[in-house]
Image (cartoon, rainbow, N blue to C red; front, side):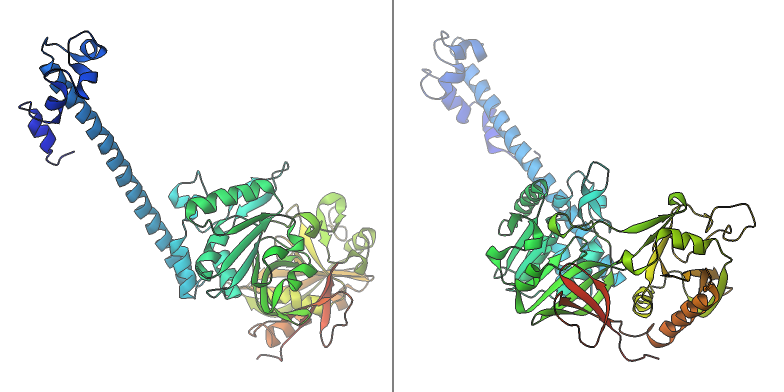
Length: 493
């Protein structure tokens, strides 16, 4: 080290601690390391003088040098740790600033939580720049390579935390344990709050426990269990935040909420996953906000295999919440072998513009609502010789899960075309005996959405126990435990 060392200066004339410890009769601690009669190990290890005084002084100096090296190493390690923490804090601040600038964060308390929680501790092995990037980090995959656990992208975590409206002192449950989100929740709940996180996979909960302890959140309860049953030991909860994609809403989640509780859940509904903030109102749930999102799928009792019809040797898939509500694959393939009808809605959208309420609107309007995915770009509606009906390339509006309608007399899907102003216009392509009428209906319904709902507040989604009647709403999905219904606000023009 560059600073002055009094011991080092005293060593120069032999009057320092080492000289006293290693000179004279050989008595004292210094004798063990280098002085005395010359017949002990200290003599062979370090002496060059029969008196031993010189050897003791050198031994003392060596001991102090080693001590100074040890202290120097500790100081250097502490300095490096401080620099690393300052660097991580700078990355956290930049991430928070970015999320604020992009609109993912509007609440100061959420921004403060992002600035406080060391995300890199929950993403070990990543450089700080990657750990604090606005992207998902997959931490476990199944044998097919499908992600089963992740640290979600910071923007959707921030959005969901703002949807949750967590306040100090609240009792919270997180379903799906990456660790980082539980730490953010702990920051928001404060020292008087309580956070429990649960996951079905013991490898995931073990990792979450280690990371939370290392990051300073040992007070968070980590539970290994099937989250479909909630965690009754720490209930009731003011807020439940689900961080896995759910197809259903288990009764335990509603029962374990306080009477004024809220559950925020990524709910798969008609081919799109939306983070829905549901407030409890007696025995049912009422949505307060929805945002598009994407999460790994729920495992255990709450898991659900996606249902779909494979068409044209697997080139196409038609998926629906209820396959019994649409014709079978053979009937749809027969429709696709007929001439195509085309109608345009006049609705123009920017390519970056969200229109995620349109699929729900169409699901409300058409009992045969489904989603079309073309797995091979440019695949024809039906195989056959060039020029035959149905052999032109399908042109869905989206790369996957394009809104579509299947009926006994026709099949239609949304399409899009570029316009000179840079926007795209939405329209309909339809096939089958009723193609012209179905294409017109789909285009007209798209125009009605744009006129009445596009700029509105969006639909209210309600979840009702499966055995209860649903008043004054259109049921758009039936699950094992709940019926999901939609109510649209008055026309917004």
